Length: 112
Image (cartoon, rainbow, N blue to C red; front, side, top):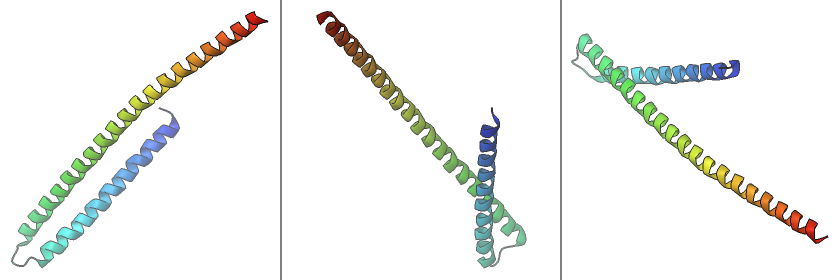
């Protein structure tokens, strides 16, 4: 892997980490606001709720990320198939045009 691809992958990893941390930070704020409004909970119960909620948010984020990744992979695969068909069609058309031009050149050459 060349340096530019490594740098690109590193930047993608950093971006994913920052996105995940921002998502978890927002989730922490939401659950902290929720548990602060819930009266009658012990600190242990609040901690359990916060842990459960953050685990759920991590699970949901992972599922969404996997779904998006699967959809991107499928779209890329479909694009490669379409591009392959287009490329074969273009190569066939160019071969036919070249053959026709050669035939025309031969015919014109024999007429003179």
